[in-house]
Image (cartoon, rainbow, N blue to C red; front, side, top):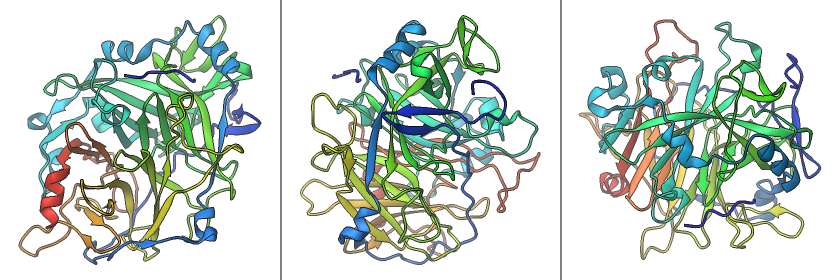
Length: 467
């Protein structure tokens, strides 16, 4: 397998930034928690509508910004070099519970139809915390055709710190971390946390990346994650290198250089951002779908030529605003592994875009069946109220279909408040995870029992359920 590398100050309240080839990589994206309102989820959204005009696709255009190799090498050398994914997995210290060990509330979050063939619940502390929310998933099935990274099967889950006024230091707000899950033994999953950071001062320091990890894709040796666009910046995506995982040697509440050592707020490992993509139209606007979009989630499509990253925006499940789904092709250049295809001006154009009337989208996946003339787009709808199942729509330019279940033949058959989607091509499994831990107004309750579960469903079962 190819694993080619390209590869606050801690003063409270200070805004951190890292410069990427002249463009600021913002580190202060708020951990905005998407709040959905009540929706029936029963109205068929109909087929996708292609967006073909330059004015429509131009709003999806990105500009690529890469950190200099010198800066990255300085930080990596100063922290003792890359430790690798393997070292993180070997130090995994959080066990996951298999489906049978999940509690009744967690199990209730699983889909009704089709049923999950594999499901896992988090270690006790992470399963019940209201400080962090699970938002995204990708796997080594995205990274390589054989489903492995080296000799390991790996699942990555992105979590965002939630600022819900429980008294945590403000420095925690918006922190982003990734669970590196050792999936070599399907009966014994375990994970280790890695904090996302960005280099500062030419690689002599680093600061915390603050981002809403609504979606992420691990492709080849790069990890691309969504960045919540805020008033201070216009980054849409952050990029990390799987060959640049570094180890902190100071256990403190600080983030970055501390005396002669390095601290990551108690985490042992960090991944420094090696770049970002910003929207050329400026900051995103989530009010209507005729403005610059706010990235809600991303996933990988290995059935396109070349492979591509697909994305969606989010509007309230209680509204009627049609959302956009679109794709960017990955670069095929040997010295640009895992990066999107850009031109000589570092511009990345959307290669395909559609409008969908499915509302409250928390995830999207594109997959073209063998011999088919067009791809199916799977769009995950999440209702706004607690204890309600969502809907997974399968859409193309001809129709929209979803599983029906229960005596009333409802479309509400998918998991409860599922987030991003990821397809493991080698195993044929569709992976997602649930986040819910609040009431319908997104207000936190001390007695709330989170319904958090990571699960897989064969994509073939999804397709059978809609026929």
